[in-house]
Length: 342
Image (cartoon, rainbow, N blue to C red; front, side, top):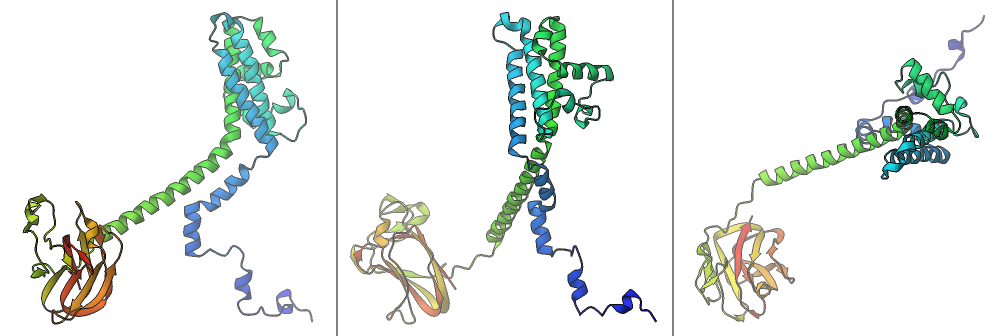
């Protein structure tokens, strides 16, 4: 008794069918990355735009001949105008030849008829009417084209130059399409990445902007200083007759300090200290932050030894009633603003 193929085969191990499944759908993260980088379309575009060095050389010659033809066609010397279009037409014909050849770079020294065949897809895009197409192809195949056209009227020369230029432009355009497609995909991927980065930056910036600010527990609390050299009026931007934003100014002394009384023990974990901005900011360095329960015995929780404009010390949360800022040397202390946070 014979067995069918399915009966003859042993059962597949668990999970093997899944492993053998072709074209498994990539994960979400991979799909997102592929979309950003344009991988599926970029891969095919990259293969289409993979020109050999020979193809690129022939295309470069075509573009150079086209550019030279444009210069010859509009001579700066009017006396050269008589044969300018004829010579330009010859250069446009060369540009078309090299553009055609770049599609068949493996062929050695092809003839014009070998490159422009009846079934040429490129020639179909020239857009010439039947008779005109035949005429342009005849011009393209004509040896010593510049010499032959020089014997014709200037109108005929110009018509020939215009037609051959159009054909050369179309052929070069078709040849460069894969390169432009690859460039467009690359630019699209870059634009997606840049726009996403800008969007994320905007979202993060908005989140930071809209984030509730920590309450300043020093607001409205009494403060004292180790001494006072001048009476300051920060609202009026004046201290001791000087235009400045500082709100206190100690004398020149050992260990000058500013102390806040929070009224009761509170959790403290950070400060924002804005140094004097108009001058003498170095007087506040080094600066130590100290806390105390009784206003007499203080414990250091932060220290700054470098010059600063704004210092935001943070530390493990401590419970204290008094917060003091002190310069541990002989100096004057004056600051623009102090905020204390839980």
